[in-house]
Amino acid sequence: MISRFQFVDDHRNTYEAKRLCHVLHVNRSSYYKWLASAEARATRQHKDRILAD
Image (cartoon, rainbow, N blue to C red; front, side):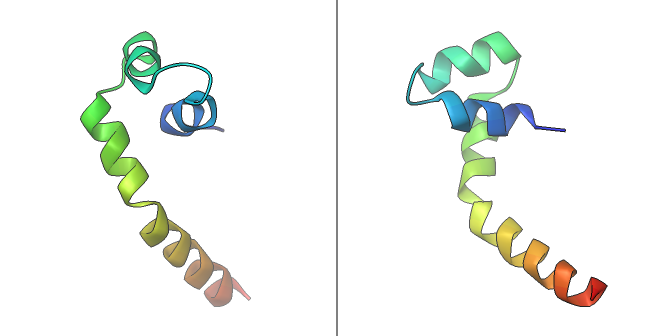
């Protein structure tokens, strides 16, 4: 399942993030907070994969 935030990120080069957030009923501030936390999420997912192995 793809998140609405990921959809906005994938298409923000084609459309404004403001417009995408409006259409998807996502707060822009929440999207930008999600975007800023991408590195932390990647690190956590990597550690989770290591633990699963």
